[in-house]
Image (cartoon, rainbow, N blue to C red; front, side):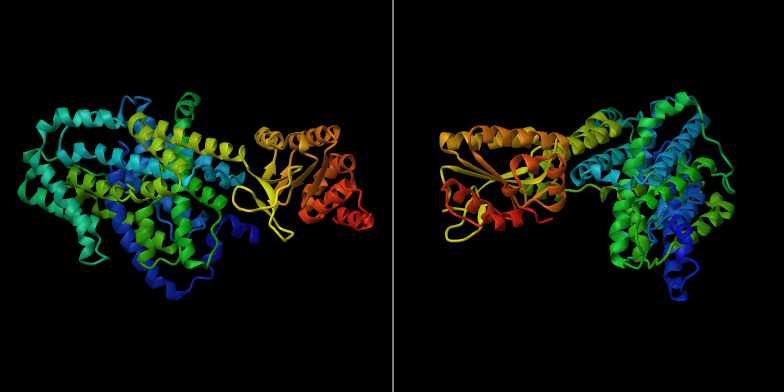
Length: 577
């Protein structure tokens, strides 16, 4: 039963459901359901699809996540980022008809589901850690700008070619601004004002829905379609039918890069917000791998029930939590509301102006543009600031897909760079104590001309051994012929691989050949096990392995000065496991 609950988290909370949670779940479910109606249609339109598919994407996919997901507040569905990535990926295939476009969208959702489900089963949840916060921030801010600009054609009521390059969009806007439809523009601006400032009247106001009602009544009441205001037109009623994605390997090979990108970005976005919300509740555990399975199943639902790729959304999840959601029942209630809309209310959306849906998207993504983080990074961490800016500019100018790929490569490169350059300190004695500290950080330390004490922080392995060696060689040259004692402080060494062990053995051999005494101090148990495995303890001598720096230095000084000392004491020290 425990294993079943692990893979079907609904069995954990549903049998133990408390009546006191029902009011909060009901309130949140209705509120988010109302949000999903305009957002679902708007994001489907952003993805280049018929708006009805946005409503289909918030039925079966949400139910599947409620069954398989571990977050009890995460609101799954279409989001701006994934919708734009979907449009970018399918655009590369140049579909010849809306039917073919839909097939590609379903196939993309299936591939995303396959990748996320597979990653979850293989316990690859850790992989998202390779997308660093600065990279995600730069990518998200740039994508938000591109998403906002992509809606200008609906807001202005002008014709613009589809593009994900900011320079192309800006040029197109400049050339077509003369054909601006002032009526559509005024309606869109009115929608933005309602959505953005309506919350100030009351937080629980469903402002996107109010904007939708405002737009429909305005167009219907004044017959504004005669003024060239673009509307949704006929919206099909009824529940989604069963659909089948393409299993063509040729199509898969073209969609795979964008599917991998959406899988990682979607999961990163989803897990980030789920983690923040879970931190407020602490009455359940969030499992990254099970989240991947839950999102994978949701995308399978989109693929087989005429939806589009989905993930957890920032704004809806925040609203879901603020509205009182305690369990995933809130999401199920949202689905019921969407089903009622699909069955009985789709005719009401005939006169919904596209500029209102553009307003919904623009307001939603405007909150994703972050000005604070770059300012903070500029002051605190120039390297991370550079990662953010490069990702931001790459995404804006080279496109969404290239931007995130560059960001991922930069994240991985930063990890490798930092791993290949561990912190190394030259130590010296604090006067009148048995304490040794970094000479570059502390003044007035006692450092003998004949001694070199080195502390290495982190692991010693093939990627950083050359860097460590060069740094030690510099210090060794500074000492010159006077050098007679070397102590390697391994207190902060967490592991040593075969390359590291081989190089350390070479150092010790070379020093011993020069008549320099060598000792190792502070090595942890697992590190001593590695030294023993590579016969290094035997080669250096058991009496030269010490628990702490002070013992090592005292021993080397006594040996050098031919003083009497308790060899048994040091032997006991060296044999401690």
